[in-house]
Length: 361
Length: 46
Image (cartoon, rainbow over all chains, first blue to last red; front, side, top):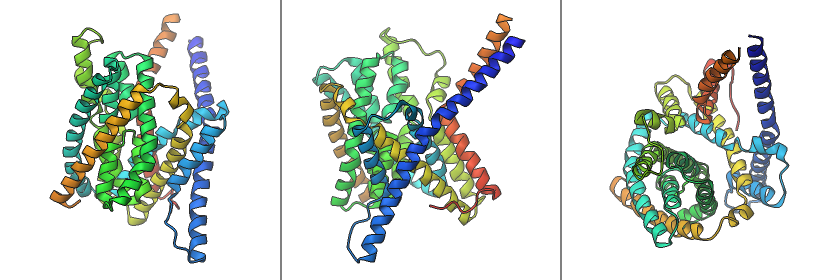
């Protein structure tokens, strides 16, 4: 029994140590985020005071740019790494809280359209990436990982699929690097294209949510266009995220039949394990707000908490995008990724423009 | 004794296996929503 007490005590001490280890990195994320917010406000204040016409550059862009500069020019001490890695955690908490800004009726309308487009996007992307991967002679499992990453939800989908189809580490890091590099490019390309095409907030948000693969980058690409577009991008991306289990299960069954992956005993349990739980959290918060449990001031507080969580996320996106590390991963997967992603972006843009004509988004 | 400690570890691992990053994020968001709803957290600025 004494052994148990010692074991539990050691475990709880190590848990406390793990939590404390997160603090420096989280403080760095907060410092970058606050600096970004300060730059946005300072520029706005200066241009207004001097009557200078200057476009509002959101804190999102500054947070990413500061993060990119620090992450690529300075070797970040190891003490910050664990905390910086929490950016994905803040993203998910932010998405759940963002549910407060959607009433269920909005979700029903947008999700209906989004889901239809998500199904078309997933099918089209899987076929396209598979064909491109074969044409470029990539390894079969690397093709699958790239297809899953570009059709469903970026890095998390690749990690989920890696275990399910027994892909090796090298293939996974190739696929993750390609998706992250393309996500970094889309952060700057999508808002520019959206503005050039004079897209509406809903249409642009739908496009960013459909075409940008990683959830953090899709959220940022949406928010860089406008706050309203960011909301729609998150909702659409959440619809894609919800499909992760089904797509990964399909590939796992395929490789099991080929004798190159372990059989899945309980498919329902597998789907539940892979299902992103933050999607449910998002719906619960939205349902509670729709029922009128929160007053207007409280809803505003929830929305602001979501913004603070995203502030940490965007700083982390910049810090974690290391161009030197990405360039070391080889050329071929990037070429397949770039060609595939450009085609997917064009395909989804066509889908959104078509949907806009039918339903006026 | 050894068996017992293994048992404790297994139970702890099982309990930990569903506490993924997603679940922690949802829990944090729910706790914050609860604090706002009860009025402990008021007027969060931006």
